[in-house]
Image 1: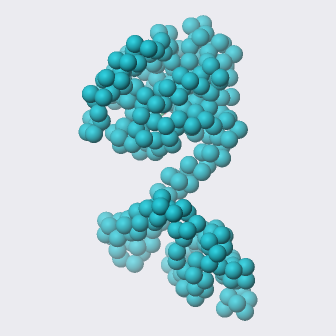
Image 2: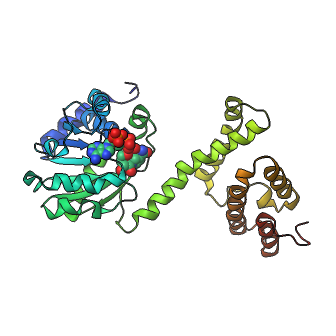
Image 3: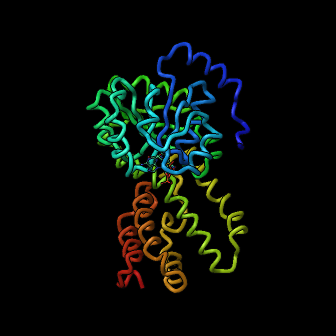
Length: 317
Ligand SMILES: NC(=O)c1ccc[n+]([C@@H]2O[C@H](COP(=O)([O-])OP(=O)(O)OC[C@H]3O[C@@H](n4cnc5c(N)ncnc54)[C@H](OP(=O)(O)O)[C@@H]3O)[C@@H](O)[C@H]2O)c1
């Protein structure tokens, strides 16, 4: 397991404290994928006990066991019996049905049931709540592309916490013990909160994939392309961190360089038409940012929008 950098000593010291002061100590994890396994590892290292993990895949259970310890189960209802807190980390679409299964278990009464979905609200846990459980969602605003990477990235990450009143403090405490920073978010806010997270993470990845494809189309291989464009990306992120997204905008749209944008559009339409609509959609948003920055006036913005939408008139020729 590649977990260098994780402060085991500090975690152990904190773990001892947790075991002394909290009744909520024994976890069952249902769904032994990226998130369940990484969070299980961090819970264990922080002093909580992962007493059970459940998954329908024996291979997933075998892999998770090395990180989390605990007893493995195929049936989630068996996994929850001894736990104080149950973390449902199946794919989003399976959370509600998984919860319904464990809610049939009489022992669920008084236990804490959490899920970790970004878009899902507490409605997904309604069956457990009706059966007397206390419910919450703790969503790490972080991407889990591999278990080891996630273990490294979680400390310092923000977690959207959506919780019943009774679960709010325990949920926040678990997040803090994982090294995260909790912030409250309502069930209603979650779809938009998560859509924004998709822009920041998943669509950023897809955007970088488009950048690499464009470079490959002119004969630059993926490795060299990455070396060349990543300093530009990091520089832009640093600018955003220092001065915000509006001030950080540079480039031909911010300058009102119509000719350059026309050249881009012609080249993309000719060579990589699959990116034409992406280029124009992002361009239209960029025009709005440039106007907010104050470098593009209303007339220039109108012309730029027409070029980006492919409208043929005297300004766009
Ligand atoms: N990945 C991220 O970056 C990220 C970030 C924040 C939050 N989350 C949230 O974390 C949760 C888990 O995501 P993930 O990325 O860890 O997904 P994942 O890697 O696909 O893991 C889900 C695991 O649950 C298992 N599973 C599916 N249906 C099940 C069922 N009915 N009972 C028991 N196990 C079942 C899957 O088995 P099979 O593979 O055999 O189907 C898989 O092992 C989701 O709610 C997601 O929204 C993910």
